[in-house]
Length: 371
Image: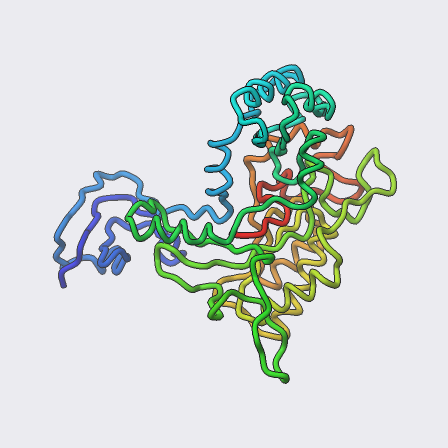
């Protein structure tokens, strides 16, 4: 048999418990077709001698924000400011180079670096010369606007479903460098026509759903925001935030509405990726996943929880029983860890709730309306 590639004489980690490390692999059509002793006797168009080096499988980053990152490159950068004066100076400089009615959009703002200080609306009005200002919190779950920005906004500013077309353009022009599984936010789904005896469904035109696409560009689960972030104090907890008696955070929409919409998407064949940072939000997420499985069965692409920052021991057992992984972000600890200082929210424990997987905030924009 002729294959495209054989890599040999390496310490190749397979991820297969029965043969975790092998010396050789064979590749055909972009897929590994043989490992270890099964490679013996195969011919190859190309052979690579690994010379004892370690070879690892490709890493799968299941929670990335490519469009978000790309947009920040076009926006005013506040990630390195050290004081409110720095903020006003950077915003003022951007405003002077902007059109008379052009928005000044800034990103990367992290109040933790300023000991919790946030810009004053009136000062932003003054330094912006009357232009609207929108400052995005580094977590993606809150923002600051000046007076003109508040007057003009009147609602949510989000991305468009056209982002999927941009990925497809990149695929067609050969510039898509990594395999992508994109997640539409549930707000991008619309009611589908169904028969009277069928459950209501939410989906995209033509009924495409999770799994549609090819090896390089594919539709993944539908993304659903149940709560916000610890850093923004909008994650929903079962016990009050330390120093804020009676305040537990909140869900992003009415619980009944959220449950209904998620189950309608699941009925249409979508796998679920439920953003749940607080343990109370996680209770709801697991309830919905369990109900979806009971009513409509499992999905080939597993359901999952994004973040899972505050998780109780009983929830760990439930996650395991349902086969639901948590997609956690260890990077948030060095980036935002001071935002969980004991004066506000205990790092090791929130009330009597141990933090088993610390992920501070989230970088998906709240209620993003597209892909």
